[in-house]
Length: 98
Image 1 (spheres, rainbow, N blue to C red):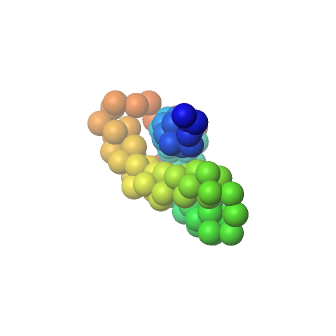
Image 2 (image 1 turned 135 degrees about the vertical axis):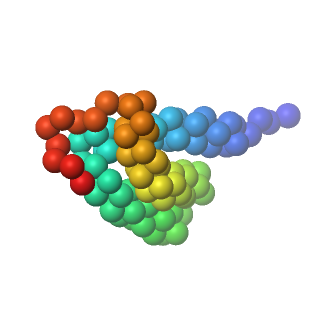
């Protein structure tokens, strides 16, 4: 019996991508503010298009995961701003108010 590790590989990679986006959202809001939403949009669109153009199935799937994690992060940047306003996360004292 031959084992297929594709599902496990995709699952682990998805877990790592989602785990990476959590601190990215926090850092983006801290250093750039909610204006960083367009960076996540750009990354999402580029990743989605790349996902359509790549022939390798696993890479295509992972690019799709990156794309939709980026799209989800757009809303999370605005939620992060609310968390900062509540005092749950530190505000950047050097950045001007948005």
